Image 1 (cartoon, rainbow, N blue to C red):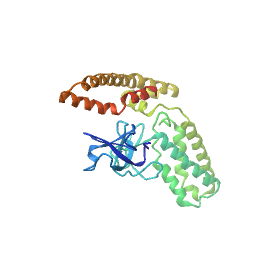
Image 2 (tube, rainbow, N blue to C red):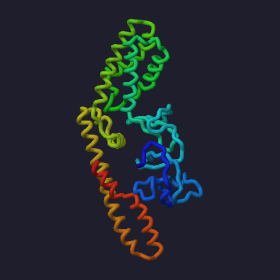
Image 3 (cartoon, rainbow, N blue to C red):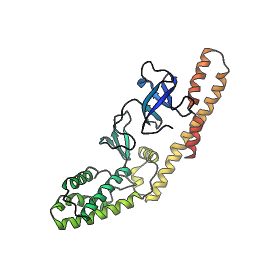
Image 4 (cartoon, helix red, strand yellow):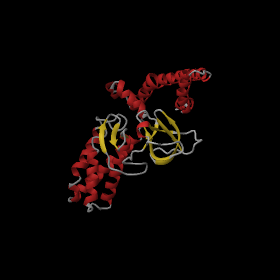
Length: 294
């Protein structure tokens, strides 16, 4: 079984013009591409390579010989390369940056706030180093909540509570009355985070598509349920269904051409047949069925 986000030792099972296909065993139908620019010189069918599996910019499973800064289940400090409306993109040493949605960032804030609350209740703020780390972490993530389905800019209660916690943080280490106030504000923040994390949100691809072509102003004026409905409908009507229809037509036409060229004997037709066979080795019909069921 190919494992996304992990390093695996796989066998070379097929060579093509644009790289090599790897699998656990020669007869496995599930294969992953190693692009041509990363293929070691002199590689042969049956050779084994240790590769890392991730998804490329087109959301396809792909392998690389490059060592990532982070693997599944691990921890690492990564540099933010870009921040957008749907999340942040982190440099983890590969061509495609690692995407971190806003909701995942919010969970990290929640964990830090919970630790701070526990320290305040147990009166363990004497551990100034750990308490200072929590404050620094919260300060760094303060502006990560510009998201219609988490915390919007207009949520004054949330942002005011967050600001108060940062302002009182260091004061609370030396002032007992400030500790009680900080504990109260931390409890408020946790309640607000819980409320926001429970909001239903659209799929990330639907939200991305809407932000590229839709109206931010129109979206902001709608209640949460209508926002979700509008984004989902817009994505399905304007993008997903038309793309699926094009894919279905393209696969059908490619199948017809493959059948025609398979019976041909001239070199040009055989070459076209081989190119189409590479396409069908990837089981496009099965992939299309899965996409339609989503």
